[in-house]
Picture 1 (tube, rainbow, N blue to C red):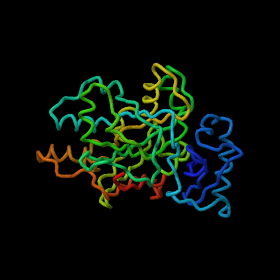
Picture 2: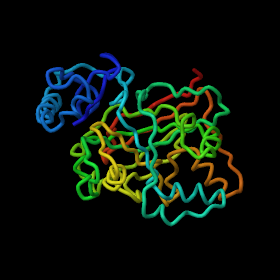
Picture 3: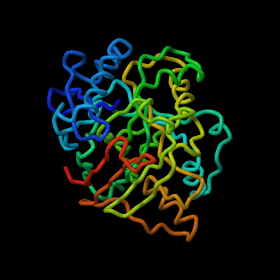
Picture 4: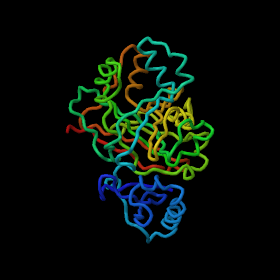
Length: 325
């Protein structure tokens, strides 16, 4: 099943069911006005939503044409956004470029922080930056959405709480981050609003590509049409989403609608390219001693998409342009 939120209908948008080909959509006000409402009542209303999805795919006369420009983030504002850095090849490279070793505990315990989720961006909304000198970068990630998760859930039980998956552009302002982290707290200015894929999909929708609490498909990233990378999201993910949920719920419960990100997708095989510019720059430093790839400038266009084994878009594309406010 594929779900999305129209920008119309208020701050939380209007929930629509989207067909498999991402062409038509149907609102379901009799079942749930918003995606958050659906998540709050997931077990009760999912069978009805699945029936709508099946009908939409079977009957081309149902629904209305949907355009990604009309779509907000699936959860335009979420109760919680937790971002991990679970692809350790990304961490290893960044640390090696600055002459730092990888602490052993990072191989055993996930790295995770809590970010802002009160005003997420739709898939075509611009990346707003006050100054190019801030070092604007994209970060392509996979994210899951949970139902209510009890405190202390085990990794073995955590996978059952994954209800939806999305793509994320976790925008980073690289030149603002160092001063923030030097204060000893966390990100605020360096992590502006995230953008999300047009639709969120159920694990069942992914078929064999969803296994071991990972999506086994490439994540294609382009800037101004140039391929930056297509790393495999299911490879080198050191902590699966079951482990990430268990880590997040160690000392508290997670509310339905919690979003957990994988961190920048990265493979040990560098020939698959990168899912962010900082990693591309780091590889340049490690190879030649100098980074030559610039960060994003005003007018630059970022496109992030995941295709299935038949070349069809699974989530639709995040397609954004960097713009001054």
